[in-house]
Image 1 (cartoon, one colour):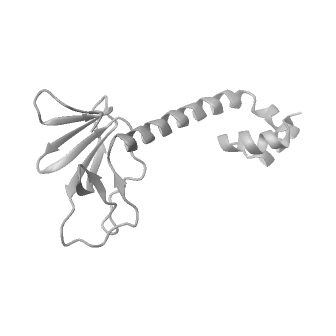
Image 2 (tube, rainbow, N blue to C red):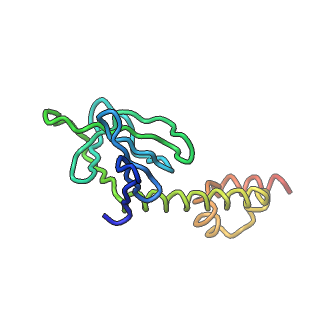
Length: 152
């Protein structure tokens, strides 16, 4: 697998910016950014595959820096047939996808911050710009139009 590197002590794998380790009989993933879809469930657990094995999320906690979250995955019990219809493959592709979503979200937050400075004037833009651009950043076009009119 490209992007996977063994650590010097042979107990950890580095997969992209994340660290994977076997700790106390479970697979521990130290992630730089959280996976939004990974929720602890009693029923309809989300199957997570890693290196051909099937796991489920048993626990998640904040991780020590530089990581954001620590996920503890347990092996999927052979007698457990109740699972989510969705499936997650933990690999470089899923990590890259998550990291690109983080970058897009940070850019959107920066765009929102800049537009907040001009909030009273956003309502005077053309409807198409308000609908196609500003609403994607969380500025509803009817509201910004009302605020622009009331502020003048």
